Length: 388
Image 1 (cartoon, rainbow, N blue to C red):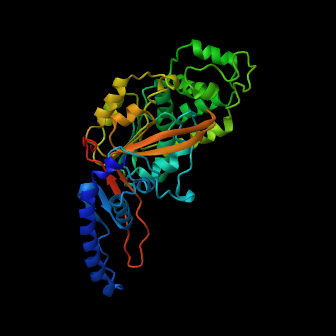
Image 2 (image 1 turned 90 degrees about the horizontal axis):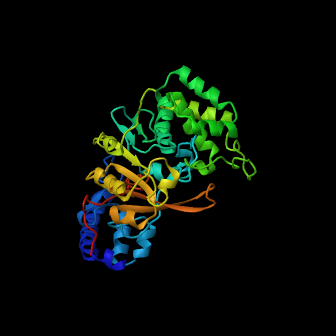
Image 3 (image 1 turned 30 degrees about the horizontal axis):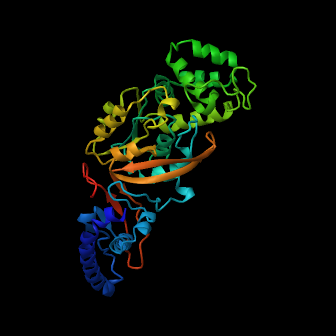
């Protein structure tokens, strides 16, 4: 590990000397002029490291120069997919969008919003678009809709039932939503479970209701699982133990208020959805897990699909990707990687996920005594090989 980052030590050392000289000149220019309104340029660029360095970045560069690799990792830096770090600058709780949970999955992102949302960069304008090719339970999409009330959203899911649910909530008429809420008011039974499993949905309402029904009545929300408590209902849980009509109705109405009038819902292959992104879009992608995805979702992925996703992202840098921690994923995506750990009540153990991006932009710090702010951006050039 030290050898990999050490390959950049000499370049960083030269860059660091240049930065120090510039900072000395910088201070010399500004100390006699403290009371002027004019603000200095807050960023110093170091091309060799792929990092914009302010005060925090200088500290990182010194640690890299001195070989303190572990300390740098703890500060949140990773070069070309090697090593691990913790996320700096967690937002205050009051600044975070409230988690809205309609669906429940072992890999649901409601508990990771405080890690994911700070790294989604959008301008709150109708000209900017959030694109979610694997919307699933929609926790991140709803958080984005809360934080940026003007951006447009494109939500997609290959599961027809899931896409029908979001299309009804975001784009459906009031009458359709009232019918859905009327179905939700009735508590589920094993008899209903058997009947819905045996029948093919005929209408968008049937599909939307099935998406929610089977998610809330199966173990862990897993699509292929049997009912909670078993068909004989002798298990610890019961089929309706995760079914709270009032809570679900409130969550659905809130989601409808957030999404209505600015959301397009699709049921397409992810490649076609990614192709819709332009330079004013941001992509958040939460594809099926590499290891256990086929047990959790209706669509079955092979290794080729994960490769296809990597190739579809191409040379873009306006995306954030979440995955399970698997060596194959780290092999495919040689990019900046963070470890995100949380406890999922469904699986009763700590779960670790990877957050991957071509570029991270950290929130700017508060202005210092001279009115200087510090903002850190990190990126890996597309198709850049890892250091030897």
